[in-house]
Image (cartoon, rainbow, N blue to C red):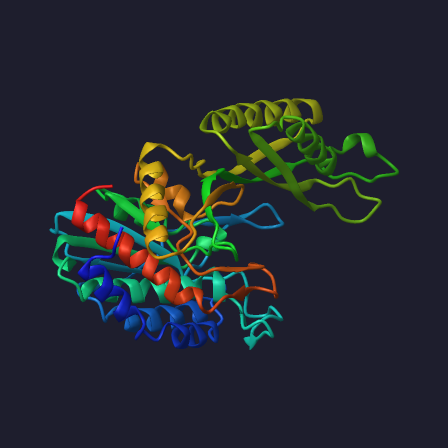
Length: 401
């Protein structure tokens, strides 16, 4: 299939966009999820950049979310504000584009600076995940605005500040923005060879707080109720419930103290990765059962904090059509497009749960994310921006997938 006049115009426009300059500017700002000042700086920079698009940019206050500390107490967490842009809400074709401004690298992390590697890639915190993706999203949208099809497509852009920690303070904003959208694109990085993520598992995180009773470990140990032992028992029993469609990872137990004191408090942290929706209900059932049995067996009190915040994302019929469209666009641009299932999660899970087809790895090609070796392949900026822009234009022209 040959490219249309509008598609050619968009691709030519992309070549003039300062994507790499934006990436270099943005990675210089530490925007770890807990760095509220850094996130505020990043939000201002992104607001200025995305204000080049028509529509209204607003910074949305985060929804409240609590976290359990090592003492078993629940405390509210601070979050940065989320960027939300709405363009032509009355246009006949509506899409959603999402990304995140936060990284996993907090203000005290040793990985703060960027450098060019011998192979030409950029090693920088958040270069691939996902400031590179934000730069190419902006370029793609600006290029679409330069075409005759712009008036046919309306869209919302959500760039949240807490994706790396589960999007708890932005989940409702994502759900509202996904309403009535024909499709969505999210700008997590593709693999270095361009492979996209297909089906994804879900995730759930729990903090299980066990209250026992302290006693002297030598004089009267039987008067105590060992919270560490109860937590460990729960961890072992939860682990026994894992299966092909559900991974269970008891990750940490906080609590305890001097060797001569029976510990009266423990906090067990557990992560679950369901690959099917039915596994969530099964997990909820055995968590309740195992916790209830532990309370009786060890004569302790237990509180369960947390839940399943991202359901599995299967490749359904709508997603198949969207992936097929992206693949066809890739062929027309001489960009190989393939995908494979992954155990990782992202906001694509949230969007798919709203019934909206989504491809969630439309960002740059890169790798080693969440490590000090993270890298972005610069030539993928133009490549993937073109892939996005032509995909958007074809959806606008068709009016559907």
